[in-house]
Structures are given as C-alpha cells and as structure tokens.
Amino acid sequence: MTAPGAAPTLTTARLRLRDWTERDLAPFAALNADARVMEFFPRPLDRAESDALAARIRDHFARRGFGLWAVEAPGAADFIGFVGLSVPTFQAPFTPCVEVGWRLAAAHWGRGYATEAAAAVVAHGFRQLGLDEIVSFTVPANVRSRRVMDRLGMTRRPVDDFDNPMLPPGHPQRPHVLYRLPRTAWEREGSERRAPEPTRPALEHGNARRQGDEPQR
Ligand SMILES: CC(C)(COP(=O)(O)OP(=O)(O)OC[C@H]1O[C@@H](n2cnc3c(N)ncnc32)[C@H](O)[C@@H]1OP(=O)(O)O)[C@@H](O)C(=O)NCCC(=O)NCCS
Image (cartoon, rainbow, N blue to C red; front, top):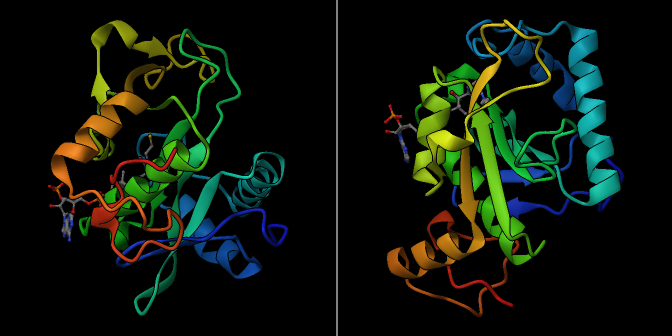
C-alpha cells in the first residue's frame, strides 16, 4: 500500500514499525470503531473513514518520508495500531511543527508498547530527520496519552495550552494541552539516562532502551 521504501522500518526490542499493507486496513478499522480507543476524539470512525485515514497516512509517508508507522508485535500480533510523526495541517502558535502520535488497539494497552515505539520514532526524528523539536498534544482528560508524553521526557507549560482549531468553538474536546521535546532536552536526557553507544546504526535497533544514545550528527 505504501510505496516501497517510503517508510523506513524501525525495530525495537518487541516491535516492528513498518509500511502499511492492505492487511492492516481491517484491524485498523476495528480499532477506529472502538469507542474506548476513540474516547478522546469526536467519534469513532466507520470503515470508509478509517480507510481514508490510512490513505492520508500513506500519502504523508510518500510526501515527507516519515509518518504514522503501522506497528507490529512479532509473535503476538501483525498489527496493533500506529505510532509515528506527522505534520499537523492546522495553524496554531506552535506550528509548523512535527507531532509524535499514537493509537493502539485496546487489547494491547498497558504493556509499554506505545512508549517503546514512540521512543524509537523520536530518536529517528532527531537523528535521521534532524528535527529541532517534537511536540505532542491531546485533551487534558487523556491521561494515558499524557503519561506516554511524560515517559518520553516531554514537558507541558500551561502557557502553551491551546484550542484545537480542527474542532468548532464550544466543542468539549477543543481545549488541548501541548507537550514539547526540544532536541537539546532529548540529548541531555539520553546522555544522563542511558549508556552512549554512538556507533550503533539508528535504524533497526535491537533494543528500545538504547534509543536515547548520543545522536549521530
Ligand atoms: C495512548 C495509548 C497509546 C497509551 O497506551 P498505554 O498502553 O497506556 O501506554 P504504554 O504503551 O506506554 O504503556 C504504559 C503502561 O503499560 C505498563 N507496562 C506494562 N508492561 C510494561 C513494559 N514492559 N514497559 C513499559 N510499560 C509497561 C506501564 O506500567 C504503563 O501503565 P500505567 O500507565 O498504568 O502506569 C492508548 O491508550 C491509546 O491508543 N489510546 C487511544 C488513542 C489515543 O487517545 N491516542 C492519543 C491521542 S492524542
């Protein structure tokens, strides 16, 4: 589905972040139809909306070389959801920017998969793409998602809170919190928390705990 080579494969200890395939569309539609997964979005998606979202994700990879990767848990499940980087299309005080985002099937929550995949994605963003900052945002009530942001070392300042212009004024999900991760903070955190291993290739990581090594520049 995604043009071959458009999405580089990222590998962590337990996960493969890879190109989308036609086989992903049915399980993707199932998670997009799940009210629990979509609790903090306006509403669940039907099959056509889910397929259209997958097509936009594929198009983002083709245009930019990065996007929301399909996530596979080898030995456990062929497709558990997406984790990746995207460029929001709306305007806000912090745009243009690159956002890290995630959406996993509820059966796969509570195992650290989102954080493990997102750590690899963030490392790819800083090392391979040379980004200066990665942001993330959600509604204040989405505590699970905010915990992933915290675990990645992202920080929120109330002054950055914003109204998501994709939703109409007065919509209960319009107020959002913004989390930022400047490259400098990621480098500092990585060097404090993990043993540096600068010669290791940035793609095809064998161990997610090595994701924060000193970036190769
Ligand atoms: C947001 C979302 C991806 C978070 O999933 P999650 O499973 O809670 O997050 P993680 O994968 O990082 O897992 C962390 C949890 O797994 C637990 N865990 C179990 N085994 C673990 C392991 N080996 N390593 C790390 N954490 C582990 C942790 O204790 C943690 O639980 P806690 O938060 O209760 O302390 C998921 O809730 C989701 O898809 N939500 C719907 C979509 C959505 O809202 N997306 C965000 C929109 S902005």
